[in-house]
Image (cartoon, rainbow, N blue to C red; front, top):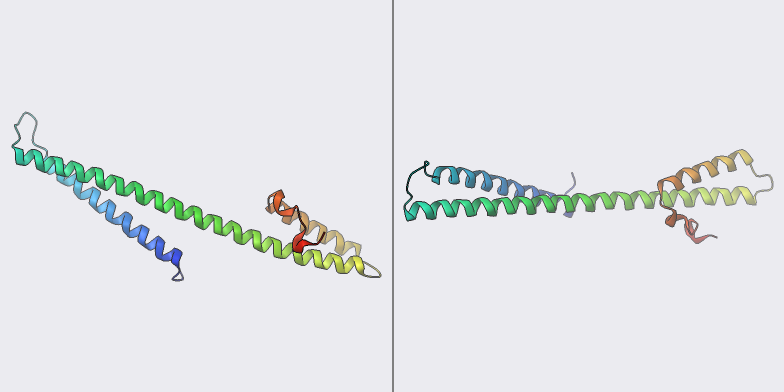
Length: 142
């Protein structure tokens, strides 16, 4: 994977998530270790240690939730970027096909089989894209 801002962000999110997971695991262990057996009386120090460990569990769980949200947000951004790239490629291809159609229509003896093929390509491209993309022909021709 290329060293891009997105890949560095993904790495940072992974490290943040790993740290949260390790912190959560350690905090759970601390709670188990600091929880007294049933029917025993705790000292103030034991109660404080247990409260601290329970707080650490809550904080680590919160961090895990934040890491999951950051990862989800990043996947959404990457997905949107892929859709935008697809739309750009689709528009460029449609522009090229329209140019070829204009050449055929302007020809003395247009190839109707070729024109039908171009129409099929445009129909396929239109199925990839929302209707709003096709409100103005590619390249502003219309």
